Length: 212
Image (cartoon, rainbow, N blue to C red):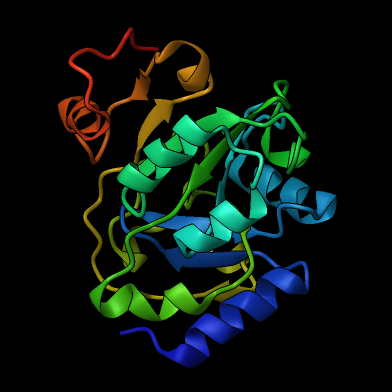
């Protein structure tokens, strides 16, 4: 079980420009400072992931996301408040081009996450710093539901490794809300831990408007 000391050490690691292995509400992930080009490059290099692929910025509490992105359109913000915290990644408008290292070739769109941290993971709610996060695997490798499932090469390369026990093992559902305020369009880019129908029910819509 994680402790307050573990959460504090995770935050210190991120703020120092380190690379951390941590448990989320889906699978094990890797986390770095989203504003540090050196740390982000290190994460991508470890995974063998092309730097042009976008990643998500994770906040450990919903109020921190809302405070950091006050420019979110009202309808999109309301949708985020219905879907988060939870095992969902939202792609939202990013008119101020925040966190460009996470955006890949589309800086006007940003992926955001707020995990549902309960039980053994609840101490992580106290982490104040946002992180750029990606699954703790080599590119195209299997997701890790247990600490021991993480590739040994990944475990050996990080500065901090937190074992949160066995996780659900299914990655987040990715929901594109980038046009939601303008058109009401919701696109499910990847169906994962949350069924597409549940997302639509939460948003009060009957259809997804397409899938990517």
